[in-house]
Image (cartoon, rainbow, N blue to C red; front, side):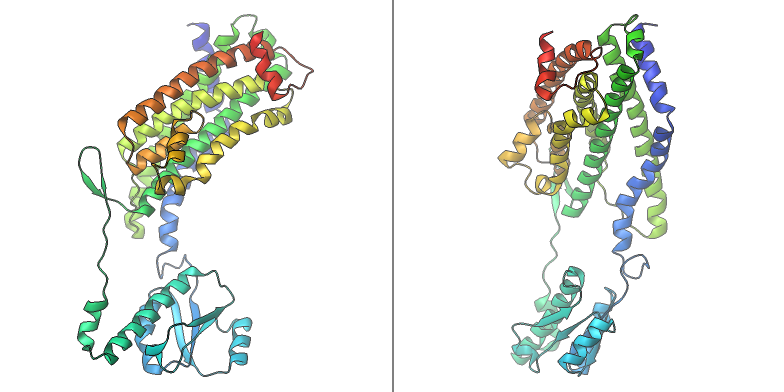
Length: 409
């Protein structure tokens, strides 16, 4: 067995046998399932897991009107009741918690152009949206009745058409899709990529730093080349992370398939084999790119605090795509987003999200992959030179510019 393969095997065992690795491998599928299942469960009326009933007072409302809208709003766990209390009394009741809010209705609802809703939580858009939709629809119906339109025709005349969105794939297939499904798919894949690359990058950086400060590396370098040590660490951690990915994906799919029907939850994530294949590809690219940089920074660091100071630009490039998930999915072909999908440090996550949306020309994907491969080659060359010199240098806290100057040695 070559020295490189021995290092790979050692790093794989050190990573896979670690207690934290085992815990994350076990908990990971359930966290992924929670991200996909819990939002749906929490939004289900009557599930017992969502928000409690919201009590709304309708001030000045006709009892017949209240009875008409009550069963509709009850589907969203909103209870409405008519009241004739004074403004001061109803305000006091809201502050005391008797009511969660109240809606003031004029005597002539058909002529109303503006309604006032008062509550302790003005940011509860769920309640505001339901009240606006149901009450507004009822007011429109009253206007149509006053205009002489038969009551039995109002429902069909005011019913807007349902809009079904379909995604046109490169093969010409039109498949059902919606923003929430695409957003959840992109969120899950982006977070998987972000967390694992950041986690293993920091693990490699700290591993190199620990061996440097403990002088263990001096013994290892007496029998192996610095480049073999660098590649061994990266490849060993990569194999362990791919094993973890495989466990996460397979167990998550089983958990969601088992729990979904039992809980009555429809899980519409687009975790197709194609998306998982792209996830693995961009994970491997991001892993080699970032882990090579982290290994170099670990070799040039004096302690963990120093490593964190040197590594903050890398974390920034990982965070930018994550905080821009929604804009990336909404406008995947804007010049700025396209630029991020081609820039090597942000390309893995951004291009993966654009592929999930399904609007990326093949040449852009190929160009992004090629640019990342070229960057990986350059980064590995730079990291190897920094690693070769910095791994044996102790007692000095290098600044980022000084780290780059180590390349000349």
